[in-house]
Length: 224
Ligand SMILES: [Zn+2]
Image 1 (cartoon, rainbow, N blue to C red):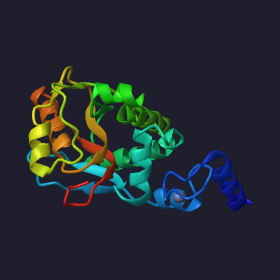
Image 2: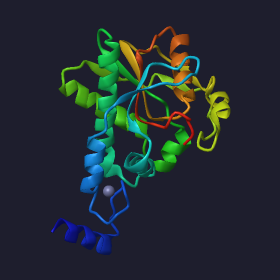
Image 3: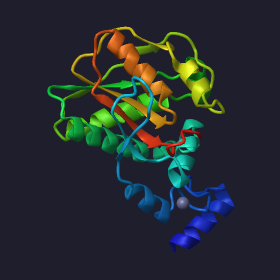
Image 4: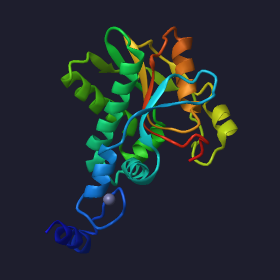
């Protein structure tokens, strides 16, 4: 019956699974099971200033497709799923680093023009959902958009490692040191240049971030 409904959905609505592209009403069972089975892990980058980082899974396969679709507002129904993955990454970081006191999630700021164009600040939205989930688990947590873009960096996609470092360096400024144990959150970590620049901006403002958590990480080479 499920297969019939999926085929019908594809025929009538053009519906397909955002994870694999096969006909389905929403995410197919295989993709959903694959994403649920992801285990968060530490991400290492040899970049100066790169903070301790945990990602929910590798930026590949279904996770990559769903993230790309969400950025283009084509898989908004999958935001809770992506939010749960980010929550797991944050929890993994907190368990490893064991900070004391309330936690403050600081999203990597999105380029304003892209937020307007897409109609969604993906990282901010996922951070808000993550905070809600952690609060339900008894964690005292807030979200602060404490870091702003000092200048608009070029789109990182297509840039190599060195170009990304130059592009991100000095791009962020902490406008108000956030309270508590600060965790930087982002959708994907690639070379680590963005997270290193974010951590540097926070340190410059006198705040030592606990680390960073992301939904996904690229393979070690750092190229998307
Ligand atoms: Zn699928």
